[in-house]
Amino acid sequence: MSIADQQVAVVRSALAGVNLATRTMDFARLAKPGLTALAVVATFFGYWMGAAGDLHPGALVGTLIGAVMIGAGANALNQYLEAEHDARMSRTAGRPLPSGRLTGSEVLSFSVVMFVVGVVYLALQANLLAALLATIAWVSYGFVYTPLKRKTTYCVHIGAIPGALPPVIGWAAGAGSLSIGAAMLFGVLLVWQLPHFASIAWLYREDYERGGFKIISVRDADGQKTSRHMLVYSLILLAVSLLPAIYGSSSYLYGVGAALLGLAYLATGVWFRLCRTKEIARLSLLASVTYLPCLFILMMIDKAFHT
Image (cartoon, rainbow, N blue to C red; front, side, top):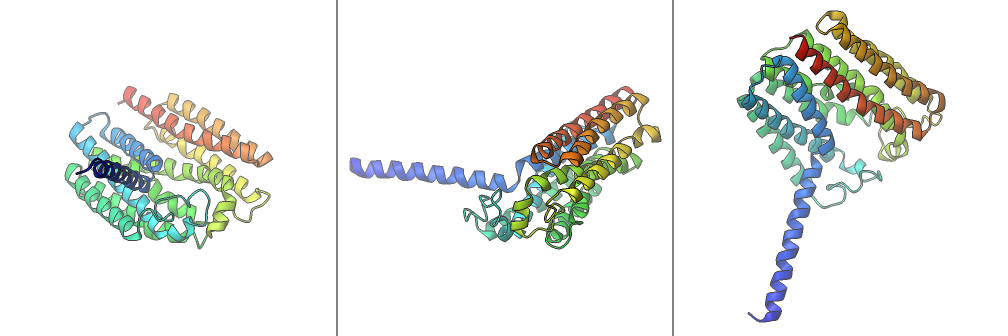
């Protein structure tokens, strides 16, 4: 082989490596790593609370691996079903499917394989109840919530249901059954998503309108509906977060901490209601992603000292 041929071979090998790395990253993007990570953290939290500190490392790790795969499969399915609409929006047009870097069959295959393997793995490593709840989450997210986004503004309420299931899945895996504690975790995460998404909806309302989604902020030029939605559900979140203390499963100190966190988050909702600017919407979004882990940590500390 001549020197020129060797150089061509080296270049082709390098390009093949770059292409493989790019495709690997694109498949990783299908999983929406941020959303999947949030679901995994919520699953871990649910497991920890359900197991009451009696952790089984093998089952815990298996549960989290299953949660990663099922979350990745659900997010990929969402992108497969919304590819045409994602292509119209500036913040999603660069995703692997609408940009043409991956094909529809590749995305769908990835989604199904991740879901099937994840559910089987979860059933074997945890239990059938956790696997059943994960299946409900995957199906409802992909085939109920996703199409409803183009039909009704109440889609976010429906979508909050599968979004609130990760800690319940974790609880089922850790405890082997469900109880009022799992229901309260479900309620907190379900309600939290509503003001949280209102911030996102306001920040990207023009994009959502171009995409053909019937989100609450679309055609809400003055922000009255969106800000009212955010304020109402921030108030409800405050009330729901206090249920563990009221019910007696958490201590008085948890109640005080949850009240302070809820009031701080509520304050950003009041501010947005008064001003309705993108800057305050971003502040409220930051507050929401700070509030949830702080509340989880507060619950875990309280559980550790009162088990």
